[in-house]
Structure formats: C-alpha cells, structure tokens
Image 1: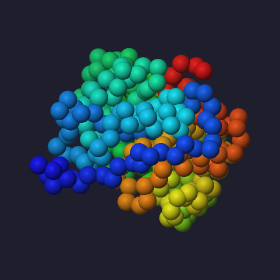
Image 2: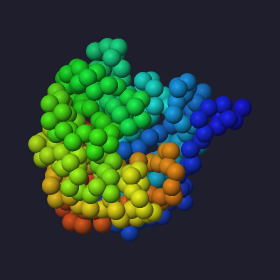
Image 3: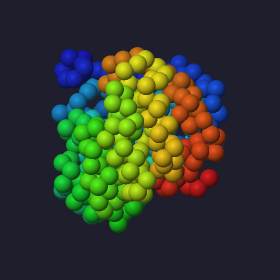
Image 4: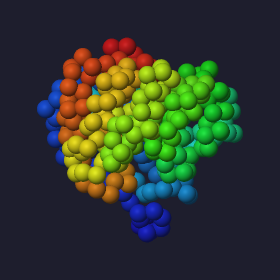
Length: 295
C-alpha cells in the first residue's frame, strides 16, 4: 500500500541535482542540522509520525555534504522514529569522525541508556514545542539535570515570540540550551521584537546557542529569504561565539519553493560576510558544541 495513503502524506524531496556553491567552506566545516532516514524494514516508523519521509537516505545526505563542501554533519533524530535512536547511533558508528547526533528521549530513559548514547556520539536531546509533540518544559528541565553529566545539552524547536522571557526561563537549565532555526523569527515584528531580543540576551549570557538554519520556515519571501537576513546579522553581531549553521536537509514539510542546498550555502556569505567569523561558526563553534575532533 502507498504510505502516503495509509498515513501522513509524503514530503517533497530535496533537490538531488545540487548546485556547487561559489562559497568555499573552510576545512572541517560542519552542517549542524539535518534529518536522516534508514531502511524502513530495519528501522520501523512510529505509528503517530507527523509525516511520511521523502525517499532519500544517509548516502544522499553525505553526497550533498560532499558537493557543497561540508566535512561534518549533525543528525537530529526525527519524530519518524520516536525515541528509538538506533538509526542515528548506527550512522555515527559507520562514520565516527564525520557525524554526531541529537536524540529524542523520554522520562523513562535509564542512566545506562544515556551513557550509551553519549558514548555513541549523541550530544543532546531535542524538544519540539512548535508541533506540540515534544516534552513539556518541566520534563525537559528534569532531564537536563540528568544529561549534564554525560556532556549533553537540550535543543529546542520553538517560536521565539511566544517566549519573551526565554533568557531567564531557559537560561536557568542545568545544561546549555540550543535554539533551532534562530528561534523561527517573525519578519513582521523585526529584530527588536521582545522574543528575539531575549534570544540575544540568552546567547550573550553564555547559557545558550542558536542555529542559523531554515530561513524558509518563517520567511514571507521566496529564496533567498531576504527578510530573514537582518535576524542573522543581528545574531552574528551580538554573539558570534554562540552560533552554528544548519542546512535543515531534506527540508521536510516544506510547503513553499524547495531550496537548492548550494544556494543555502552561498547564503552563508551574505549572513556572515567576514571569513574569520564564518570559520568560527562553521568549524570552531561546532567542535565545541558537538565534540568533533579539533581541526
């Protein structure tokens, strides 16, 4: 039976004819946000999945990295598998110098399971509050206490303007926190909106990070998403040591124009014009946050 008929519709796939970008990335650059999928017969989908994935594999992702110039990648566990993190663990095992991951976990996880994930190369767990499918904040706070000893952090997908107190609210977690997609900023409210200013305070406090990724999630424009560029510039000006970059490949659930990943890489030069700062974000910060071997 067609999976799109027996469950959520299949997502559009990414461009496989990836344009080689004009921007030359520094050695050891890391793409710090992607979603990957394994063979369904080996890694079954969760019954309550939000989407049916496009027909792309880890090999497609690694080929994209090779084409655009990234040597490293960070996989973010998808709700497709729920809290079954076997695929990302197996992927890291196959590419231990190249890949790291962020898991999905629940309250029932044991200390031994946390230790196993950490040893495997998992550097944190994700909480999805945008889709309202992730852990509650109070549960995430308790789990942060537990994962701190394993060198992990907490990653949040949320809408920053829903949280104008995020600097104090998440800044008090036991671990540092990472905010996906620049907090999904609202172009209509601009860089002085309360939530976005709170995000900047969180980063400057040294308790938080932000991923420069997925401008299309909240942009009101077509590529190259010029209405998101002011937010990127504001983050770079305020806290370049607290930023990483992510492709968000394969751009699941995208309802607008599918971007070419080569174009997204060239956009880095617009967001971060200074070469030394780009190296800091793409290499140095990623090594600190995800435990990659130092370049």
